[in-house]
View 1 (cartoon, rainbow, N blue to C red):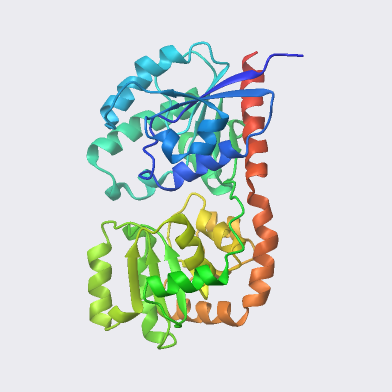
View 2: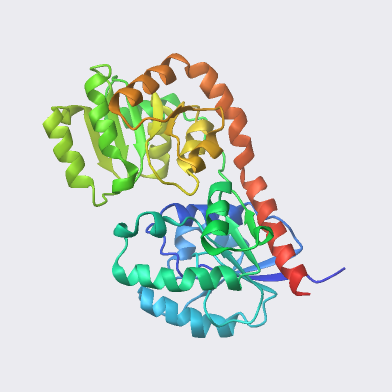
Length: 371
């Protein structure tokens, strides 16, 4: 019997709770990795084990010897400490989108999206310069580039003129979240002041490209009792959203609790009339699958990555106008049973087992190409 493939996974960039969907993407993929022919070691920050105990129990952790989560320190560590520690690995997987200049083993890199090219104004000048320098080099150097969707895969191929066979889709693996107990839904309704009123939910940080304002403006043409629940951290568009709600006179219908714990978040989604997702840019769109798993209809924009995820299991809105979104919400409410059934079937494409199997295939390909 041959020895297991020794894979080192660079998660030193991952500050638990602060890097958003990319954290969930990698953690869920690794959670679905059950191939015993692959031996994984995770290189992490000191807070990783407490944040992800299931992975800490399953895989060996090597904690970086730096107490500060500073990008400059982390980058320097990748080019020195990490490069030396992973010299004996068969494959080194860099989950943060870039590959350090040093390191002799076959490299795999996950590119979650190319948002810095689509919305450069959301990034500091220093960050843009770093990504403009490192992303093309990283893609060229990697044996395999992993993308969460066909949309990101195509974007990478076109942006960096990379051979298509080196860019592989490894989707998010969404664990089972439901069913949610009715008592839990009642509890979060009371906790967040929703009472018995109907509401739609949008789980996203208030970044400008997420287009929360569109949902505020939508309320003017919706059922006068309908509320919009916006869960997630505060981004740069937060003041604008609050001003828009005040101008429209709908402050009492915009419920903004900020970040909520995972269990309460699931209950809030389960109790909603629909999950609405007007974002104009995504690399994947994990909340869409989470809503389908929780039995909640989905209404989303027509960005290619989101359409790729939902297929025919959602109401897709092609017009960025409040009236179009109001009509879409009405349709989701009237067609709820059909959308929930379609969503339950669609979400089976995005299980941890599917993601873990695809991830194992990438590792074997990278190792085999180096042999």
